[in-house]
Length: 334
Image (cartoon, rainbow, N blue to C red):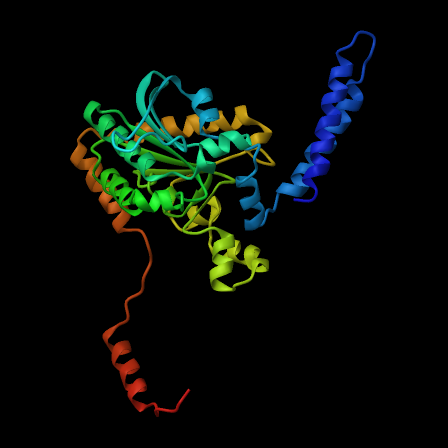
């Protein structure tokens, strides 16, 4: 957003004044208060009515917290597990044991990089086949010990390179979906940033799906949809609106279970507030999923996905009328 730069400059000015204010003999508290009020007003004006495309840009903001940030803030005793026992490790997808308020859980999280070097290491958050197989290994381990599974989704999509095709990326995604559909332990998924295509869905088949307020979740990127449907890059914003990819839209459609609020401007504006809200939601939904018998959990999961979608049935009279109208039309009729 064009006005975001002005907000960043104002934030920097406030921080500079705070540092000066801490010096002996200087009192700038009045000026700081005025600027903070102005900053909050500007944020409300800028972020109160965001378009779908603007939310896409917030979801992709490089300052946005990534999975490791939330793991460090919310969980304790994180112990990372590596490798799929076939090809190797995938740094774009993390798995590991951790504790949430003292309760053991299994984490499966997609991780992007901050620097160019880290992005190369983590393939820009795009998971390869060995990553999904590692996730399957971790989830089956969680089932064996009765630990809930928590997944964090943040990827533009599965890695599309030759290496991924050679490693059967489609098969790895399918195996992950099959495994998650049959897990006899609670599964919670949280979209913390980008949720793109099958690369996101592969770790998103869950008993409850949560989304941060400015996250996105879609079968394809707006750029990809614009290229396919209109063959014009300029139609990207229209594609973003048509995809219904924001948390608000997906909640209205009944595809997700909760929208986790973010501070004005995105999660990176107040990470502690966002992390606290995410933790509260995780604890609440884990408690809700403590149903006891695995059979009850599996049936509820099955019913959940069977009930997704909307359709209309035409009555017998409507079908007959449509057939008669079709028969009455001449071959050349429009």
